[in-house]
Length: 223
Image (tube, rainbow, N blue to C red; front, side, top):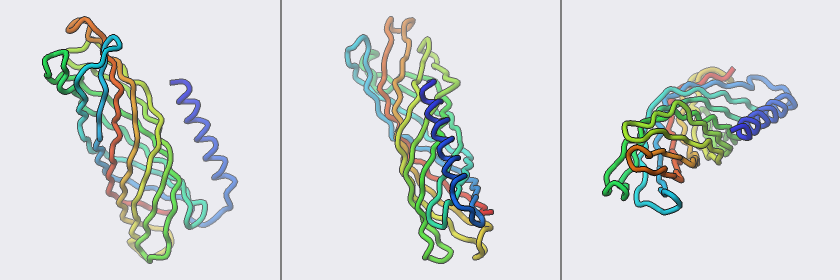
């Protein structure tokens, strides 16, 4: 956890340094507010005492508000930081140790700040598409183990992210309001430890891939 926070701080400092070194230009900042759908493409490998168990994991889709801040180094190159948090319900599915039944693993809050470097296409009039790639830092907090497990712990994750979207200029002037649509693919992997001592007399490990697609619609304002 300390290494992840240190990496995040260093990445933020490096971004701030690059932004400060960039040549000044008009309207470098853009803020967007979107409603996003976070749709995990989940899977997991379960084990207990080093022995593989049959089963996987199911993680709920969620819809929440999101805010992002974008800094334009020039008219084509920008960096975006997104901020949102979601609460997901989690189930272990088809668990062989309990006769192929599903097991309620409660819920967990996920905080996945993501920084992307973007290329914006500017030769299409009011329609302004972009693509991006970057890194995601995912933290899990307020874990609720559900009615069966004694406790549950999620390791934090660092992984890549890809992005595509567009802004549609609503007033045809530099700066001002825009409609935005955005899609991201984020790779998130967590080593999950579930204490089933009371129910099963064992601790179950899960190598869980969450890997959500994040779809967003909203509006932005470029200063």
